[in-house]
Image (cartoon, rainbow over all chains, first blue to last red; front, side, top):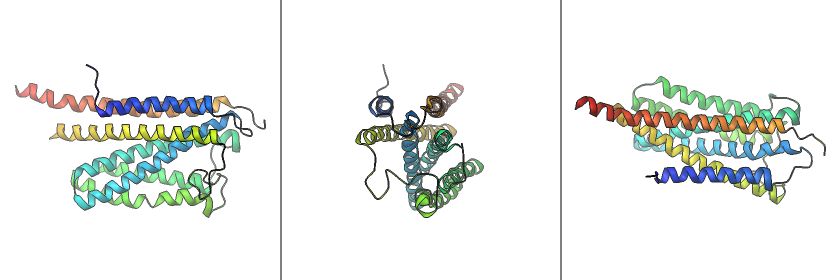
Length: 220
Length: 47
């Protein structure tokens, strides 16, 4: 009998949404006038960074909830979200670097946005290393929760870096104070991909939390 | 048109992202199967 658990249904939904996102990004959205087709990397790059932000905010909230309640379920959620945040931030850095080469002429530059994003990525890699280094579950959860809260202070620095310092990276288009200055078809394609990535994140997070729970039960 | 299409960069970005997400998904699947098998193995040994 096929598995019809909510997690599996969510997985299928995320898969279909990603296919719709590919269709929107490569079929529906027009070719951009100046950058040409390389601009289509945006339908991967922007949803990836927004998903990474979401993941790190989940880590922040779950870390605070753990410190308040001492329930290990919150710690599992914080750890899973941080792991996914690192995954999506890695995709952001990689896709941004690949996009940068044809548009800026370089794979990497020590621009404020790029540097602060790399620092954010490394801080959460450090969070995961800390978790791997401490064996006792309660102590690991407590230390990680403190780091999970402090690390989130980097998110606004990354986001506002293009406003605070002179940067090669363009200012925020989607989360900026003004309405996004992009064509409605490009905006819609981006929106579909953001939803698809959010569904993928929720699916992977529920899977990751369940795996952590199964591993804890198996270790008892 | 100001810039050439650079389809190879587009393909590389999407391919690497698919490999990263697909790899993580497979890694989770392996961990799930291993964790699910452990209590069953313990029960078998106890019996």
